[in-house]
Length: 279
Image 1 (cartoon, rainbow, N blue to C red):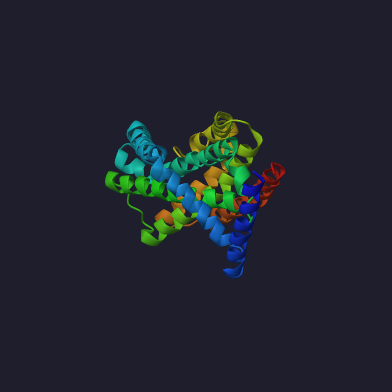
Image 2: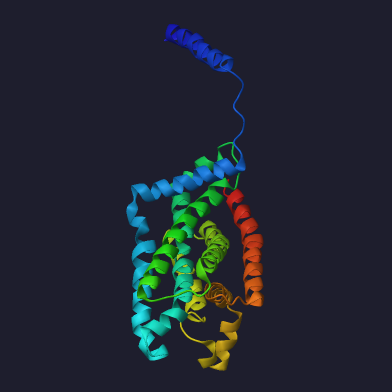
């Protein structure tokens, strides 16, 4: 046994010498490269578990068709007229609702111990979180494209042209990215992915349904309209409608951008603080 140990020691020493002589230590990866790597990891998870795309493919189609044909005739007289009002709103509802899966996926990785391994790597600390969010932006883009294509098939015609549509989708992606930091914060606090989904739904349902997505707030009771008028989702929907129809409300758009900055500035540092505490 002693002889074997003595033989293995020089061999290990030789391997270390060879590695040391191979060249200088590679530079530490940048924050951008590590974030993109973790974003690519999130996309690879979809490749291996394609069922994850169900919420960004089936749900957008179901919501758009359901609400168009359920409310169109009653609220606007025809589905053709209602889709012009509904589509920007249903686009917001679809993407905002699926942002909660960011926290669900994050919590699952934490429970499995994957993030313990990430924290031991010599990388920029927030990169696993930022990368996961960047990967989800691809999912949001896919959901947005599906809703928009289906809307065009149903008769939606954006008066703002291609530029207005692209600007509205970009604004929606920015808002969703900032909103996702809330769900990552929740993922760091609660213990199970079911709890993350429960808390997220409790927050999202009032925000999406008590808004101007489906009907004009002028038809609502005063107490409900007071909430709808200050609802962040209402500001976002109004901004998207203005961009798509070529009649931008700069006040609503400015409030939406301020809300994005506030969510990122508040919940981003809180999430990182909770993340570091788990070290």
